[in-house]
Length: 185
Image (tube, rainbow, N blue to C red; front, side, top):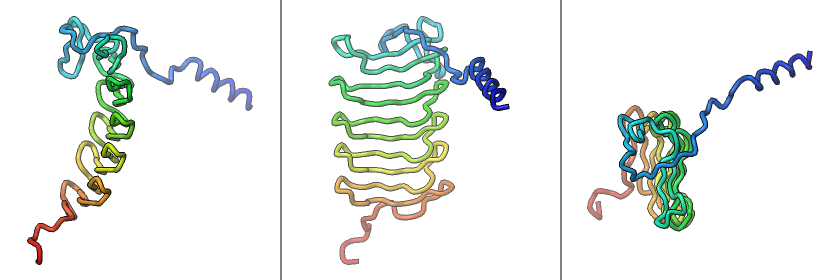
C-alpha cells in the first residue's frame, strides 16, 4: 500500500505544475523609453503588453539599479532597487499587477526604512517605519487598506509620542502624549 501511495504522489508532482508561474523573457526596457507606457494598470511596449523587465540603469549603464518583472503587461514577481552606490534600496513583490506580501526598503546605511505588508495591493497587517539609526519610528496596523488596531509613533530618542487604536474607523486613545493645555493646568 505504501508503494502505491508513493507512486501516486510521484505521478501527481511529475504532471502538475505547482508553481503556476510563467517564465519572464530575458527582455529589458529602460524605464524612460518613450515606447513604454502604462495604461489602466497595464504596461505596454510599442503598443503591445510587455513581457520582460522594466529597468533603470546606473549612469554608466553597467548596473541595474531598479528592475520590475512584467508578464502580459502586469508587474509579476519580485522587483528590486539599489542605490547608485550599490546598497539595497527596496524589494517589492507583485502578483497580477498588484503589490502582494512584504515590501522592504532600506536606508543607505543598511538599516530598514520600511517594512510594509500588502494583500491585493492594499496595506494589510503590521506596518513598520524606522529612523536611519534603526530605531522604530512608527508601528501601525491595517486591514484591507484601512488603519485598524493599535497605532504608535516614537521620537528619535525612543520615547512614545502617540498611541491610539482605530476600530471600525473610529479613533480611541491619545493622538499625542503631549498635553495641549498650557503649563500649570
